[in-house]
Image 1 (cartoon, helix red, strand yellow):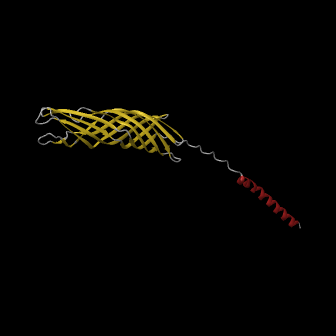
Image 2 (tube, one colour):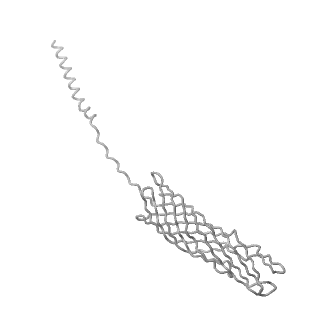
Image 3 (cartoon, helix red, strand yellow):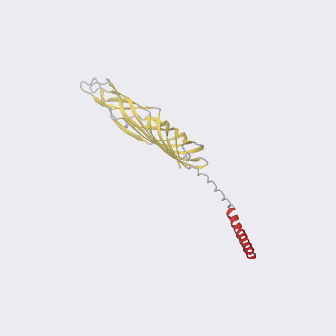
Length: 269
């Protein structure tokens, strides 16, 4: 009996020692680890550049005229020509950069193409008799007028949610090319009492006037990234143009540019 009691006492002591040594490890295993601090949210970098891609429409027509007087058959021939340039259509591209609190610079280029029609009236002397001028008139068509314009502007832009708007104004450098009437060709045969215009050939005249522009834009950005969008634009640009078909002709005067309305895509970066 004494031997049995001694074995039981030793077994109880061993179990107590095992339980005591396991308790710190169990406590260490169940103790929660401290949470890592949450990473700070990084604020998005504001967009500095805006790329504007428009298809633009010039709804206002342009009219101009010129005349010329020169000597034929010892008397004066007079040619008066009136032109009408129709509505225009073309691309408009611009890059805008923000520099300080919405203020920035804009560089853009627009191109407009117009069809030109008109009428020519001729008073031409008779080759056999004095003071017996003959008259003739003819329609002209197939002429053209193109206007390229480089815009150098100061711009101000702001954004509110998905909406983005800008105002801009500055100088515009135009490159104008217009078809003007050359000398008409006639059906002029004996006895020369009738005068008929058979053709109205044209010559292309160029000028590069400088003017100004002012405009505004309203855009909508797509999606969460707001890197792409679409919008509308209104632009008014103008410069005085003087074109001369030949030394004997008067100046054909008109204003380049005018009001244009555009719409298209936007890219922000």
